[in-house]
Image (cartoon, rainbow, N blue to C red; front, side, top):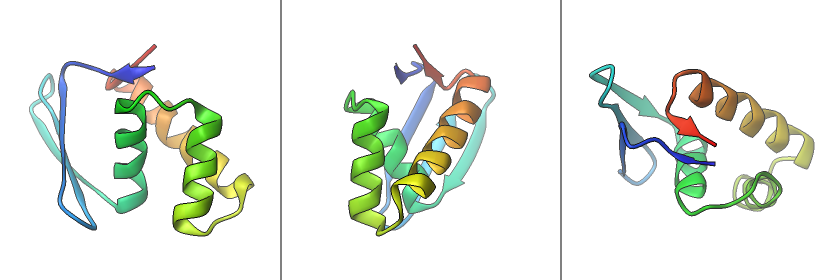
Length: 83
């Protein structure tokens, strides 16, 4: 999985700004959503993302898995993450 060429993003500390160039939309994201985008851009697989989120945000693996799965599904649906 990788970030689509039509997505630009910037880490602003606790917030992330994402630009969907195809739809000409600017999106603000919280830290956990932004980190998922970073991890995808680094080539992390799903299990590694769950482990990283569990450690970084001190959530259970089940909660991390659900959050990551839901967010990736949304990104795929919008064409912002591709296989």
